[in-house]
Length: 127
Image 1 (cartoon, one colour):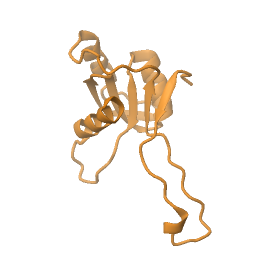
Image 2 (cartoon, helix red, strand yellow):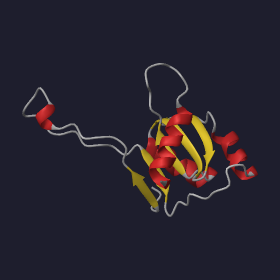
Image 3 (spheres, helix red, strand yellow):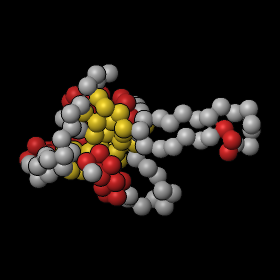
Image 4 (cartoon, helix red, strand yellow):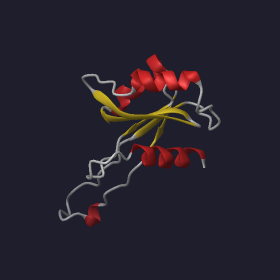
């Protein structure tokens, strides 16, 4: 596990009072985005390192996750993954220098929504 990680929780709690089962426990949010410690919002988006990282991680697959989208941002390279976000974070940061790893959101339309998700994620961290 990468010890210097800051976890960004994106999501909400399902309240027991909203459930049809009054005995149900509230659902706990799961971390859906991880950032490296002391991430800065002033990275060069067009550096050769960033471009190389995007090429290396785009479509990368393991037994535990698949990188569905990656983009260079003012935070550094952000990777959106399907699967085990924690494992992806550990491997992508340690091996490739990715700075943010998040679970890709499925809007049900089969459209590529990665650009908007990355913009929203960067705004939530930097603004």
